[in-house]
Length: 329
Image 1: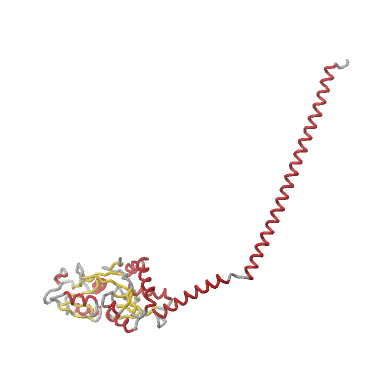
Image 2: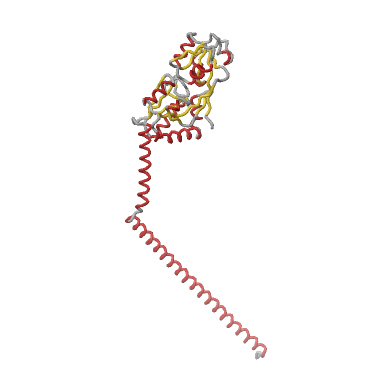
């Protein structure tokens, strides 16, 4: 049976559709391939560009390094050297001024915890002034040499004669005429020590007819009580141990001094006690002999730093001081 016209038309349409589909698929694939080829070429170009950039940077870095090696920054290096030389000269000048012997000789009042005491077990020295002087020597980069005296008056005399370089002692108006002092770093109450069986209860009980009071000769308690007491007799001891001997022998009825000394004496004298109240305040500062002007600013800065940094507070605690406080303006 021969195909009808409708069948022939249908077949023709199908064939034409197949041709178009094949053509469309082929065009899409070709377009995809072209796109991939272009993408690949772009990445290759980017890769070559990056390689060239890395090579150029490396070459530039090597060039700069070579130039820097050949032509170092002389002005900057000279400035650094000059600054270091200036610092070394300043340090050397401070050492010559404050430690002319090559060591920092610090005068200490042996037996006063605010100055220096010996450990009962080891015999080692400790105390606020001792440890403060040791730190001062460390900052000056010189050896520390403690020089021991029996009382503060002897320390002051040694500073005047040049036998010591530094003294951490009580600041007074009279002493400031011959000694250059830093700002105070410590304040201590002055009081009275009595034997355990003494009838005295208050400071007013001490300044009575027939009462005998010992002090360290030439100290601030000596000048204060000699001026203010009207009835009690003043006896001057040559040392703290000498004062203890006077109390034990009943040659005196009381002992007047800064309370850090009194509490240390009380520890060594059974049943003794420190009376409540005080007859004055001592301000302790770092002193150097007049004429060592180049060291004044350094001593002042050191005292302020020791006070404000907590060093003095730590030394008070280490020494177990009672009746003493860090000085505050």
